[in-house]
Amino acid sequence: MRVAIVGGKLQGVEATYLAKKAGWEVLLIDKKSEVPAAVLCNEFYLLDVTKILECIPILKGIDLIIPALENQEAIDCLVRSARLTKTPLLFDKDAYAISSSKIDSNRLFAKIGVPAPLPWPECGFPIILKPSGASGSEGVNKINNPQEFEELFENGLKDWVLEEYLDGPSYSLEVIGFSGVYKVLQVTELHMDKNYDCKRVVGSAVLPEELRAEFESIALRLARNLNLEGIMDVETILHQGKLKVLEIDARLPSQTPISVYHTTGINMLEIIGNAFVQGEPWQEFDVFVKRSVIFEHIHIINDRLEICGEHIMAEAGPLYLYPDFYGADEAISNYTLGKTDWVAALIITGVNIQEAWLKRDMIIQSIKDEWGIEKYSECRNTTC
Image 1 (cartoon, rainbow, N blue to C red):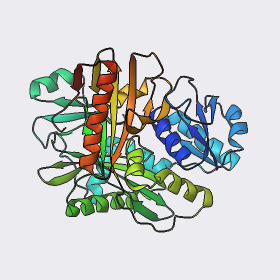
Image 2: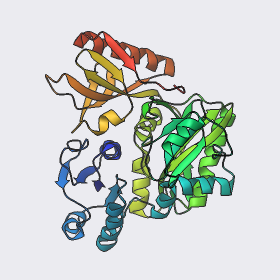
Image 3: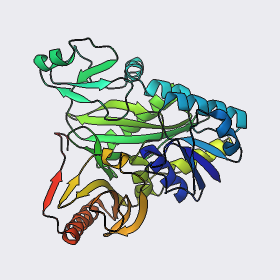
Image 4: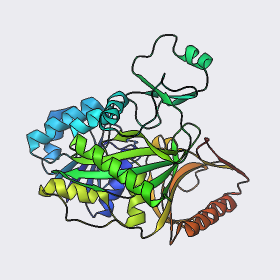
């Protein structure tokens, strides 16, 4: 199958990685040349998809279009281009419209009774501040007291979401949907840095069976209420023994699909992509853990090794896929010979989580020894 992935940043890296694992031929489109996924694909086209007349000749030979960006104008143009070329577009514009607004998402949670953080001012301080339309950790801040609140919001509260601050482990779960058929995949645990940016994904998550079942039920309820056609990610936090939904994203996320692939052997992009191309849902399948995985971001700069959130990958320029990287199963990295400032996303697996952590520690030590590194740091927040 020949697919066009539009957007070469972190979602594009995720989509390209999984598409190549599915054996698909990948054509990547981006209006910038030095994007992270630029050399991971089979073909790269430097193109602005808002210029529809330039885009259509390329998309005519494609079996599936996969948006991997969040620019609304570009998405709208892709919808039109897909219609004109009669090419399946792996995207649900209605579900995305709700999930891309934290205000609208919170309304949905309240409407169908999904547990979520209390909104301010129903809760006290500290509180979490989120811009309604931003993605992931962008713009997220913790406000500890009324004084900080007054300093930040002397000009008003328009388009901001404020809700109670919750501490505890964070979890992610993807659900796919097509023609009224839905399937939840595998729960992963998210480790955040001090800026609430995910620095590490651990799969499979250690979660009591009753909480896992509750999480799956919540994800399915959300998917059904959205009439989901595609992929959606649901993120929760376990606070004082109770799961609370933090956000949903009706798009292909980054980090967790690769982790699910190595944990279960299930390529969610391949499954949902084939459904869109063939026009029918998948055959029923079971999800079970085959391996444990640690997916982690590192930054090497001179004599220091840092564990950081995925933002370090976004501006690193073109990334390469390296097998057996210092003992890691694979690494996605901008490392080239002689470079002293580089980043990598390490993919580390083991027969169980204990083996994966032991292997991970040995890999970190190998990198430190190879590069003569004495300084090690890990960006943390209170939930890590």
